Image 1 (cartoon, rainbow, N blue to C red):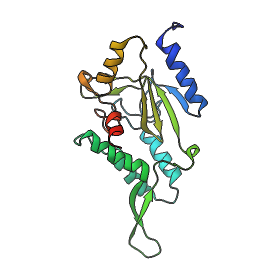
Image 2 (cartoon, helix red, strand yellow):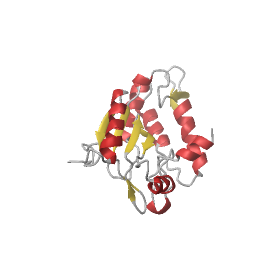
Image 3 (tube, helix red, strand yellow):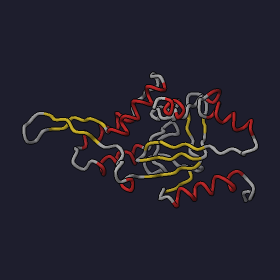
Image 4 (cartoon, one colour):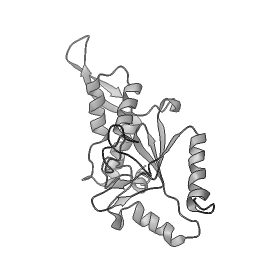
Length: 210
């Protein structure tokens, strides 16, 4: 039985309960299974986007668009931006989330193709989106595997990451900032460049760019 004074019981579980009160679906990935029928329907730990949930939500938010347009949007959102500077990758993904994605679809009235804008997030009615909070979500990079305490997915995209540390353990907190989120010797980077397991959540750079 977990200690009543552990980090998990004092901080992580109350945080999960708070997210649940706010309407998030919560799930633990500590014993995650993989494959199409797995817990999160990931093939491997290297996948940081929940593609099945993403595709389902894009279809829900854009019912007028054909399957080809949805697939094109999924490809755009999961594009490997690992060769880009973090700030540029963040800005590009930010624009896709905020403004949507331009897709080409058949023009059934005039023939040929026409341009439509596909919504990734419903900013006007938040309840129309899918909010999933995953605890102990493992991510495997080129060298190591990291496991943030909480990762929040909005429509299948990892947009929130939370790592808990004991408040009096200053060394652990500094290591979390310098190691967990920027990679360091872990071989995994956590940030808004979520499309690649070595650059999953570039939070600080994203904040500095806006």
